[in-house]
Length: 158
Image 1 (cartoon, rainbow, N blue to C red):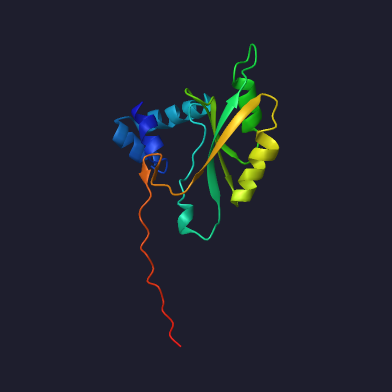
Image 2 (image 1 turned 60 degrees about the horizontal axis):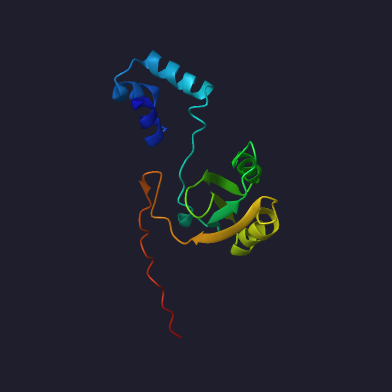
């Protein structure tokens, strides 16, 4: 478990660093990582990017979705259909008033609204949605998004 925790915190650590930190041999680390990948315990490696520090314009939305569960498949078939869309980053089965939480990204609010209105809501087993737009990220996957230095405004007098 220590090795997995270290990889989750920082997947850029070298096998040598991991071996030292996990109190394992280099060969054990390499073998365990291969096993984790083969058994789909590790699904991939991903960088967390603070897109607000770039020129890329994007909007992220959290969509709560009410669905009618399928006999014999529960919520799985509906969730699988939803996560096939390219815009969908994450899908979670939830407790509470809504059944699924869907995280999507788009270039504009209109693009996200079109996805909800034209692709998600019309699905046969979807009975309701509530869309929430993420205005600012403070922390994600244990990483804190640092405040940006405010650029001094340039005043022009004529």
